View 1 (cartoon, helix red, strand yellow):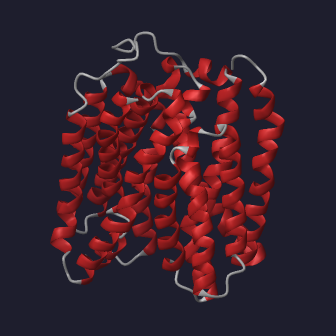
View 2 (cartoon, rainbow, N blue to C red):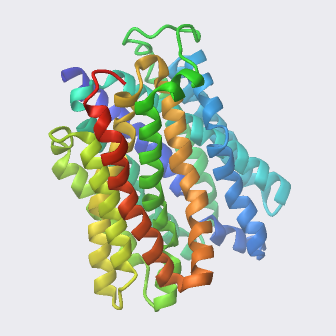
Length: 388
């Protein structure tokens, strides 16, 4: 445990730095509008390029993590992000260069996350993994409260030049963090140069891994629904910030106050409760008629995210042996990010049939019942087995 405490600042710092890089571009549309790109379709392609490049190659990123050291993959990923964000800063209004830059940024971001999460899964002992991941992911949530408001303020005060170079600067910080991982690779008996790693076919033959991936999909759909909250708020004439800020603050506080409890209960049960809790919170949000109600449901939702997201990563080591950790990590991140593609589409189609509020009732209701069904029908029988 002493070793884990020494490594936590490095891992939390890496999480904070790479998520600061990603969150910095949440408000990229404001800059694109400034340089004369007014088409929402064009802006959508520019924004989407990042997420496509960070999500679709995730299974292949695991092969890079297996082939090279953590220091090499983390530093290389950060430098890729630095090159991409520098290209974006120099692209002006050129659509091809903007999209190419976003693709480089997205690939670097995705590879950094896969490498960092794999490292955490390997070096953190199972008995403290839940609490450790809770503390580490505070770093992932914190930029939402400090980086985005700061950069938004800069753009409101014509600080476009400073905004453009924030991304390359943070990417270089990520590279510096990555370089500190020298001398700690494969310490848990992992072989280097790709030898001894398992295959994807071996991974998907593990029943426990398949059940985890299904559970992650259900949780991920509840997690990704947050990006559609502004649409719900607009339909009700409310400000989405009441929900968003409250949920972010409570998620951080939940991880701070309850990180020890995440190892005190069976993780499968806690994860099921978190997914159902999120679903119930989203369902309740659809009935909000005031800012206070929006904040209340955001508070409850933040509690679920505070528990659920770190457990999504902590349970990778429970479902797969060390030689399959890189591939299992890549699949979990692929599912979580894929939900951010799928959920807005599903909510959009449901909204055309049921209205926005109806969509936020129907989809969470389905997920609310799906989460315990997976536990009682699939996960619980596995707990009676000696091995996956």
